[in-house]
Image (cartoon, rainbow, N blue to C red; front, side, top):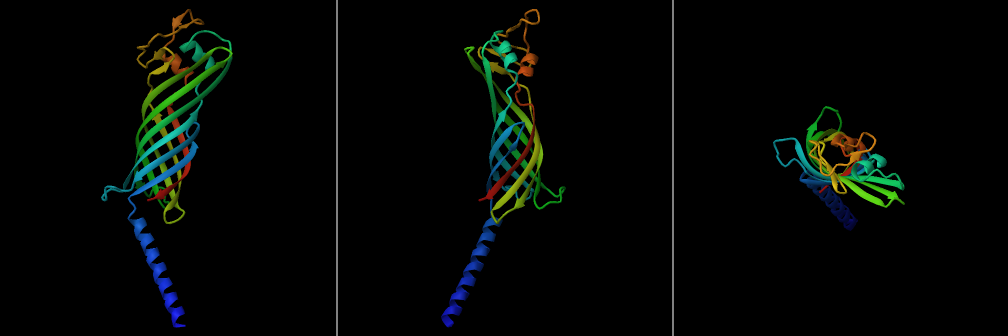
Amino acid sequence: MNLLKSALLAAVVSISHFSYSQKTSNQDSKFAVGFSTGLNRGLAFNVNFTALQPVETLPLHFRFGIGYTKLDPGNSADARRIFINNATNGVPEEKGKAFDYRLDFMWKTELLNLEESYLVFGPRYSSFTANFNYIGGNEDFDVTSKQFGLGFGAETQFKISEQFNLVAAVGLDYFFNNTLKGHDTSYSPDNDNVNPRNDNENNDTQFTFSDANKAIKQPSLMPRVLLGVVYKL
């Protein structure tokens, strides 16, 4: 009996010590990693790394994230006319993607009256590629752009366990127009264009950045709705 009591006492002490250690460890967490997926004008995936309140006097986290989004690349017929030639043969296949890099400042707030909520804002950078392939038409080319932007949103985290949180986030990113490059042609917002093509449907006047920007759907306004998880290190 004494041996049983001793074993039970040792078990209780061990569990208490483990629980206390876990609690202390989580309170001392300085970093977190996360993954989320959802819609960002297209199907999106994001991974991120967060420094948890590195400045003790500010209720602010710093997060760096990298995202991948599948996007509508634009109008394949107009893309060919504006960047290549006026040919119409071939069956078009098109796809678009963007990698985005973001720095988020996460300001803890009680506005939503939820367990753990944040206002999120910060700078953005996007690397966009639209691909147009004309099967049977001997044309396969990319149109690319690199853009800076800004974003803001709101985020709530729900505790799953001592280390895992479920994340729900909404937001809006805005990217500034930048040069569109494709084949041997480029169109810039100031219309300092390189080798612009002629519009055979409009008295052979040269295409402009406005024409290219309508044809190619480079990131502009990018609404975000994401769900994911966060793991505190």
